[in-house]
Length: 260
Picture (spheres, one colour):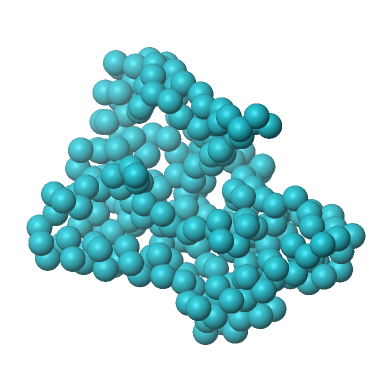
């Protein structure tokens, strides 16, 4: 059963994961959160209140997931590229929305999950090639986190995870997934995505910028399902000294912290 607070952005299981060489990152301040003075004051107030009650909290830089683009640079023309924005983090309870807004939300969700048949075929073809006998390499089921970000990231940059390969066919596969990232921070995350006024922020973002997520932090998180040789799954129990989900079971992961 699907968690009511989780929605699927991109499902790669049918393609048996993506190689590092098939994933790239476009990092630009164009993908940062939009803001205004009133919102910044609200964020500061929320942070001050949280820290006064939970002194162990500290701020840190995060990557902001703006959108992604799924395409094959060698098999699919630009007109077939599939680009979409991520869902709200955390996901809103659609049952609480008015009927008209509920229909719009469902429509946006369906559009976000829609990938053209031509893109799927191209991805499957490329992944079938590298999964032939004698042609297999380790699959990367989760996106490789960026280890560092350039301090001059104001100019749009594409950063590809390098992975040496002896197989020339794999080298010619091309990028299939591009993540468009900006920068944000944990304080902004608590003051936007976890704010009690998140519905208002979504509405404001839709009106002002044509994007309900424009004012939200949307930090990029990473996680892994760790399976042992004897068929067990490894979980961790979250500390009580965290801002959300304290003491609950979780998979290993977190938020990558860029150094700028």
